Image (cartoon, rainbow, N blue to C red; front, side):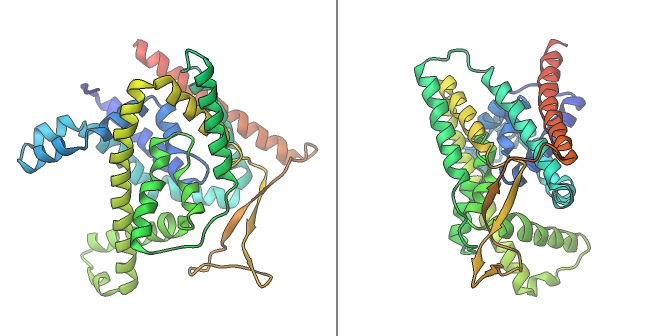
Amino acid sequence: MHKARTLSDKFFLFIKGLAMGTANKVPGVSGGIVAYVGGFYEELIYSFQKINYKAFKLLFNGRFKSFYRYTNAQFLILIFSGSIFSYFTVSQLLDYFIKNFELYVWSAFFGMIIGSIYYISKQINNWEFKTVIGVVVGVTIGISISFMNPAKENDNLFFVFFCGIIGVSGMTLPGLSGSFILILLGNYVLLLVDSVNMLYLTITDIFQGDFAFIQDEVRMKYLKIVSSFTAGSVFGLVVTSQLLTFILKRWHQLVTALILGFIVGSLGVVWPWKQAIYKLENGMILLDSKGNKVLENYKRFIPDFTQQVTWIAIAYIIGGIGIVLWIDYYGKNSKKI
């Protein structure tokens, strides 16, 4: 897994991290799909798996270079730098497009996921009975998750830690959207919107030399939430990567089949033609503590093919498929160079 990287390699790893971070934030879209199609999924899992007892022993003994090489730290730093950067840049832009051009954004993602299904299906060399069962199980779980109703927001730090463990699944399990799981747990707005915004404000204040936020109870509450969520995410990454490394070595084709099933099952979540259904209380739309509408689920429908907007959306779906096929083509040709 360890290899010398050119400046171009480092740049594209950062861009891939940027794409993965952006995808992780979108409900229904899995950052793991980006990792899989981008050709760095197994290295990602391998690198997470290296964050173990031996790594911490090297770190505490002051063997920083050995720790850096052992954990494949350069790769992780580039990927996570891109992911973190996306939350304050591309993700903000994506939020704008979802708000103003929701149908087209979902259409593009829907197309990209269809393209991912084609890409991942090619990784299965042997369509035996257990492989087919793996796909069916993955589809069943994916569909079941998509029809669950969201819970209420909960800022208990132990529950936030649990959300971190579950939410990070979108990075390690392609097809399982961490953001959508957080919606089901009721904490999407709390953890990926409000807390991220508060963290951004805090970082800005620190760079400006303003530490007045330490006296701000609301700000400190959010920083505790961010810390707990981050700790849960790191714990989840380490544990799931250990398990996935073990499984991938022994049942690679079966795991690929399950991933394919997850992705197929997730298509219902990102179906472009849907209408949000919000929770009601006494005939009024229920709002959370921040004044945001509380999502219950989506009502999906077949589009009207006589409308121009439908055909524009279909064009975006085709474009999304084209993007994934281009990434596949680029990956194959770059290996030949």
